[in-house]
Every structure is written in structure tokens, then in C-alpha cells.
Image 1 (tube, rainbow, N blue to C red):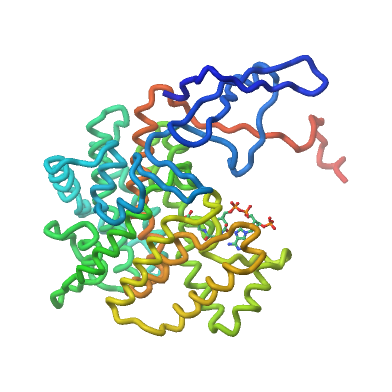
Image 2 (image 1 turned 180 degrees about the vertical axis):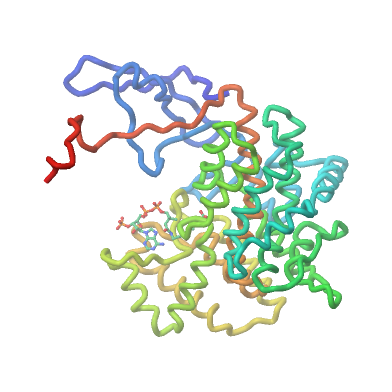
Length: 436
Ligand code: CMC
């Protein structure tokens, strides 16, 4: 659609000049309207400047809505709290991809579609051997997902609806297998093949933890917690990695290449790498008595230290995912009988201090989803290096839904931001002998 006009306009006049532009206002279903600046350059000869895109809508989307001031997150209109409580990850995947929750028959068909694609092409298995044994699972994920473009030629035509559907199934189904194998490779254990009689989260835990030498039973409470963690990470509108996927996809690149780009973008500690960074930070602090010194470092303008797991570009009140995650954290710790873990005590104390400290309060910095997810995953025995890979497994659903929405929009164009040039003005070439 790309912007149906509300009939209302914003008028922009350049100081001291006669030139005025009328910018149409595009309303959202809920949330603020946006000024359509597409004709502004033509009318005024100026661009907008918005590094970090904090005030720019790069697309219109029907998938996810966030109200950062009120701490609201809706997927296709459904509050995240209700989905996390009553739904399953695959149901949420269907919802994000197709727009509505599935009925029983659609649900069964979708499950079957995903489970039919959980195995990897056997030749893709040898691809893993090319990595160093100590490779980070995210490095393996970037490489292997990118390599899927070379293995699944039969679903690369982005203009064919059926190809798009099969690629989506393949990505959602194979990401847990790739992530689990990346981990198994790093610890020198045999790869565990997927089991289609298990649920999505259950199968993932099975591939991560089982060994061929003995039976492995997945704890249903931990499987439910994993499913909920996947739901909470499934989509989050136009964050850095999703925007990366859209930008890559806008060129017509195939979906596997686009998702590999999203994985690379997710890896950074300011985004998906934060859950791993939280645990590293807690280990570095080491003891409750060191918290005041650490907080001083965080507040010091000259240090680059940040309180990982705190703050969010959009949420300035609280992160609704963090609340659910905090509850899940208590459930998991209760189930596992974990009491008095020094790292968890440290996390609780850090949270308490930060929530009352003027620096954090005045900047509206609250715990985000990653503050608790790292703690839960650690308690579940998931190795720290796998935290971001797990986030990638969940977010693949959001990425592919957003990619599909973009490709199916007839008004879609290549993403191509502009810039304000601040380099040297035009100058003549100077021969090397004449340079100072
Ligand atoms: N610790 C200390 N100070 C912070 C933090 C933090 N975690 N986050 C923001 N600030 C300060 C920042 O220094 C700045 O202060 P001042 O106004 O004095 O210069 C102010 O708060 C505004 O920060 P910003 O960098 O302009 O905020 P942003 O919207 O660009 O950054 C963020 C958002 C998430 C990158 C940032 O809060 C951060 O680095 N948090 C830690 C990393 C993290 O937990 N990331 C996970 C985000 S949720 C999951 C996901 O998106 O993947």
C-alpha cells in the first residue's frame, strides 16, 4: 500500500524563503501518524537528517505494533502477554506470517509443513567441518544460513508465492537444527538429527542436549519455558536486524541471503548479543560488593561501559517482554530447584540499584528482555555462546514475515537512504610529487 493519505497535511516552510511544502499525513491504525516526506526534496530541495532512524518510518507494516511509552507490544493486534500465556511458538509463527491465528486444520497443516523441513541437506552437514572447532555459533549460523541459497535452488524465485512459502518453512524448520549443530560441533559431540514427533521447542532442546549413547527426556516445564522465550523474541517491528533483512530483500536478494544478513546484524551486543553480554558482565562484576564501582563506571561519560540488558530505543517505561521473562525466570528456577545462585543474586541486586539510581531513572533505562533471558537460559544449562543463536532461531519467524510482507507490497522499492555530505568540496587532482 505504502501510505494512504488521511487528507490532512503538515506544512513546512523554509525560514526566510518563499518555498513551502505540504506533506500529507499518513495515519496508523493506532499510534502516531507520520508525515509523508517523499516529495519534500522535489518541492524544497532538502532531505531529512535522522541518524539511527529514531524519527523515521521506513515502511508501513501490519505485523507488529509497539507503544514504547505505555509498554505495549501487539502482534497482529494480539497482546504479547496473551500470546505468551496461551499460544505456542508455531501458532505465533503462523500468526506473524499469515495475519490471523490458525484454526485447528490450519494449525495441523502448518505443523506438518514445518516438520517436513527440519532435516538439513546431508551435503550441508559437511559444510560445518570447514569451521574452526572453537567458532562462535553465530559465525556458523551466518555462514550456513547464507549457504542455504546454494542448496535450495528450488525455492529461490521471490516472485513465486509457492517458493516464498517453502523458503519460509525451510528457514523456520532448519534454523534450530543449524543452531544445535553449530553448538554440537563446538563441543565435539555428534550431531543429533531432528525428531518430528516432538514439539518445536522440545525438539530444539533435544538436538542441543541429547547424545546418541543414551536416552534423553525433555523436561516439559523447560520445553514450555523455551517455547515462551521463542515467542517473546519472535518479532519486534523495524529493529536493526529486521531493517537489515528488509534492506537486503529490497534489492531482490534471495530469502536465505537476507536472513543471513539479519543474523549478522543481530549478533552485535547492542542488539541480540546483549543476552550473552549480560552474563559476561555479571561474571566480570563477580560479587555484589563490586556493584557500586561498576555502576560508577557505567555512569562515567569517558568510559564506554554500559549496563547490558538495560535500556531500549523504543521502550521508555518498561519492556513488556521483560515482565513475562522475569516471571518465567522464577518458574524455571523453581522447577530446577535453584536457590541462592550467586550470579542470580548479583543480577537481582544490580536491578534493584539501577532502578533507583537517578542516572537510570532520568534516562528511562529499564531492564529489557535480554536482562532476564540470559539468566533463564543459563539456569536451563544452555551455554552462553548459544544465547544469541537462540534469539536468531526465534527472530527468523519475524524476519521472514517482514520480508514476505515487503515482497508482496506492489509499492515496494529498493531501500536507498541519502546522506548529508560533510567531506571536502570539489578539488583538483594533485600529482604525488606535489603533495606535502
Ligand atoms: N547503560 C548505561 N547508559 C545507557 C544505557 C545502558 N545500558 N543505555 C542508554 N544509556 C544512556 C546513554 O549513555 C545516553 O546517555 P546521555 O543522554 O547522557 O548521553 C542515554 O542513555 C540515551 O542512550 P542512547 O544510546 O541514545 O539510546 P539508544 O536508543 O540509542 O540505545 C540501546 C538503545 C538498547 C542500544 C542502549 O540502551 C544499550 O546499549 N543498552 C544495552 C544493550 C542492550 O541491552 N541491548 C538489548 C536491547 S533489547 C533487545 C534487542 O533489541 O535486541
